Image 1 (cartoon, rainbow, N blue to C red):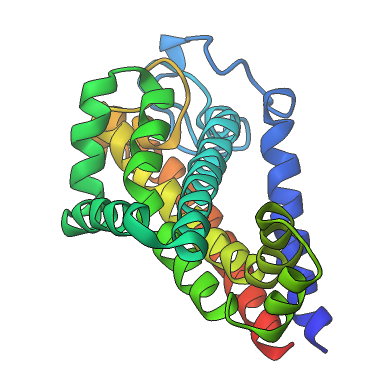
Image 2: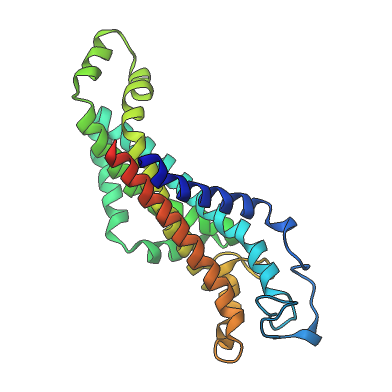
Length: 265
């Protein structure tokens, strides 16, 4: 029964990732070709999502933007998780002065609103979508550090950890063969639930001009370009907005299904 509950969300996520990866080959029109004659045409059979102010097909641009938007969000979560888990496991298992210092540093990061700090960091990088990814990852790692540290503290006093030490296993062996396999499930669930949040934060940075920049198709920057046309030509703004909504919903459903799966085990 548990497998059935997670099967459909897993299939949806897999299809979404495959679709995003091959998106440049699935666009019915050239995403950069301008045709002012058909500027701001409403949705029709020829252009399902209408055209933008330059006459570019919105459906093609939304599809093409999926690769940058989705895989950038995945990169943010991957960087946050790896950095946070490495620091959290190190602090939780070894403790000492390093643990105290690094946890106080994480407290400083957590004291500020994440998106506000990311905006400030992205402004320093000024390197397009790459800078936005680094900015979000650099302010998001403390959550994973705290989570993994807490899990390690509750795990390292277990009987099987003492048995591994008595058997002569090194610290590295204990971490990779005993501790990580027992905490990785909760880390993965948290990461999956963070993908949707990271996608929206990347879109927000691009909307503010701190992420992807035109003419690169990216959902946040596309919304920013057309925000003044919301009343006159709403399809130009709503098309990337709908794409963000659907993608975030799919990843959130998958994350919740994965959480229920691990809790039921």
